Amino acid sequence: MVREGSSIDKALAVLEAIAEHHRITDIAATTGVSKSTVHRILQSLVEWGFARTDGNGGYEPGPRILTLAGRVMSRFDPARQAAGALRSLHERTGFTTHFAIRSGDEAVYVEKLEGRRPYQMPSRVGMSLRLHSTAIGKAVLAQLDDDEVRAIVARTQPTKLTPNTLTGEDLLAHLVEVRAAGYAVDDEENVPGIRCVGAAVFDHTGQVLGGISISTLAMDLDPDAFRELAPEIVSAAREVSLALGAPTTLTRR
Image 1: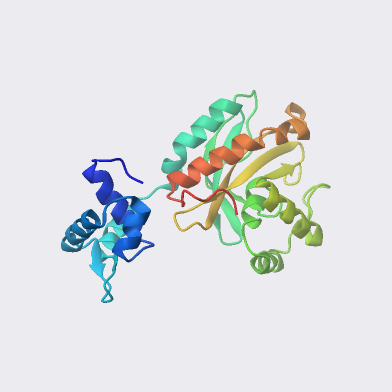
Image 2: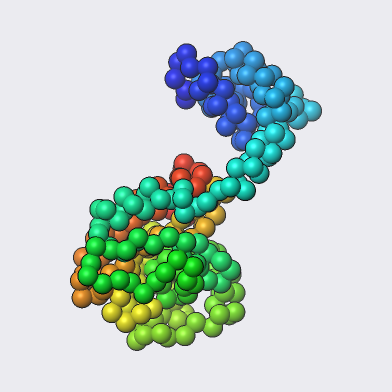
């Protein structure tokens, strides 16, 4: 619903509503804007090319929306959009903070904020990471359907990198737990002596894009204390997702 008397809010609400609703009655019910005002706004949107009639008495998004979206996406930098949420997470926890984006059967770090510790994590921007043994990777895999996960596993043939690394059916069963929890923990599964906790990040289509995580030496934080930080990670991942245009109704999948 929009604020009473705000013509800009009403126009934007109608513009957003035509992504899902075509009839004036439905748009009015969704936005709380009167049908006469909705009709007037739609006429203006049609003139500007942001809406068009569908030939059945309804309306749908117009070609100018696609043109504008294309221009915006060509300049869209996910790391820059996520910067605020990542900095906030970094300040609250003090641990090394990462943002990685899925690239095929792996993920790639696109941002790293070093923790406030007398040591540095071995990760770096541009470095690829495995999906089966990292917190971000497992958080990503948990958002994919089982067939896609099995296909990735078949292609990559995950191996044990440490005694704690999960592979095969153990990994697949673990991903069910990750999906239910909404976050993943790398308990010295990728690199001995390093623990991470991560959560998935979604794009404007609602599909998993990558994930964020915090990392530290295992001796600095025991597993139980690390899991207590999970709500911070999940909240930050939601902020990043919203900054990337993910649906506002999306919490976790």
